[in-house]
Length: 385
Image (cartoon, rainbow, N blue to C red; front, side, top):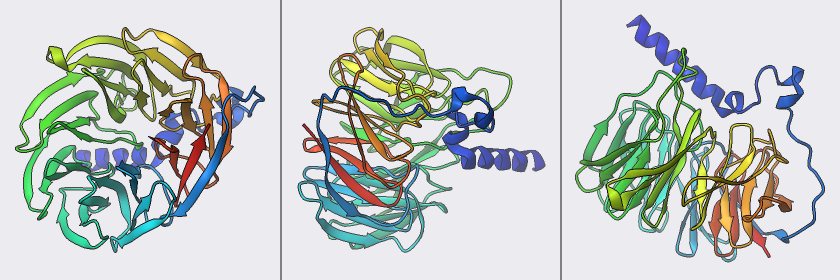
């Protein structure tokens, strides 16, 4: 009992420290210049970026809060319990909901139901007028946004259990659990629902595909295997959002690897590269993009995983998970800047400051630019030309 409690306390401690300590902002950073954020440098402008609109969606921000785009509407939530639907074109708030509790994760939405979660495992669902539809209870705290679609609302709780609730009623549908490590990162992770399958990364370095209707596991693949002598060294969580490009399903871990599997060949891995990311990856049809744990931005070819380019000008700037727009690949940083890099060679093309302290939420690509959820509860659209 005491051992179990001690491990839970240790896990909570690392979760509270989050990625900040693991990403190079170490307790020794003031004594070692290699951990200092790189200063902003001059560059030849290749894109024009400007704030198209900004909308207040609540108070606060942080890991676990990721906006969702459905059609021409953006759904977002904030830690103070505010939930909003915002018009992408104008930034006009179409409705506001109130979860009546502090939140730890949000949102998931399919345009009909929008779901958020609280630290005690409460899951709150809203209809598309912003009215509360139902409440349910997960088995423990939820720090990852719910996934909504295929008739279910799916959450992953801190006891490594994935649970589904009926989208219409909130009644439990199924749940599965996998053994988890003693320690796990506190960073952005996200499940997705595609073609009736729930795709989720796990803290044990695996990707999993689950039948959304009945909870049966259809496939599991190993992105990386834990290594090291201590619990801290063995952290190898799948971070960010699993990426699908055609038949490829790709994922990346902290202290591990980036791997792409071919789902048309039974999920066979087609390439893998050693990689350590704090925040996750994104892809276009040709390349995968991610910042490593020292915030060196990199592009890898989807065909075989070879490195196409790397950009060190943003080292230690605590980069967010990136977004790809036609003109560039974008990363947010700890000072509220959004940086635009060439997809071809990684050169700096532009930057804009959106405010709101550190950008910890993943950037979201849209057909109107890049959406940024800031640390002070604003949703900002950055137009790019």
